[in-house]
Length: 154
Image (cartoon, rainbow, N blue to C red; front, side):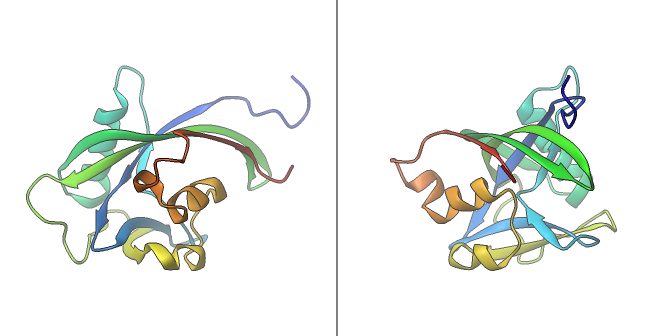
């Protein structure tokens, strides 16, 4: 492998929760950036199962995982280490009724917040291609492809 090549490829399942023109973001409190909620798919687990598990572990909320929206490939550097990840994005709904105004966090290193779609560029949402996809209309824009690939910093 050439220098700077990631040692593994990560598979992440993410959820797009929408409410009143806003989307739910997960914020890293240490590094102050935001991303769509979700987490790593474990061996033997489907992407939908992983997403439901991650929501339950991180928020205590049960969700219904809906339709597939987007596949995103991202090659980037994080804390000096090369990373290569695939994110599978699904529509997600709160299984027990409407979404809460304030989504709790069960982990001290993250918080959850609702952000207006128009304000997403100011939230620190990563990766940039996901931000671009959402601000261009996300799942409501039929002209957007269901696949985005990017190499950041290139």
